[in-house]
Length: 65
Image: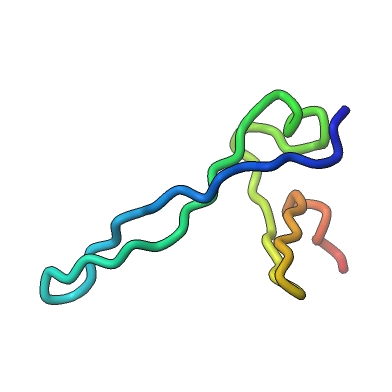
């Protein structure tokens, strides 16, 4: 099972107030490998940002911490 994936951030057009458009980064991840690592379709995840890293864990693992 792979422990690392490289994906490309996609541009996302966001409409702001007064019809202004801003392009923001969008991250899309998908694949069987997610299920193999405990991420099932429909589950909630917790995303933590630290030191230029995104840490993504299933939200049910954070209960009781």
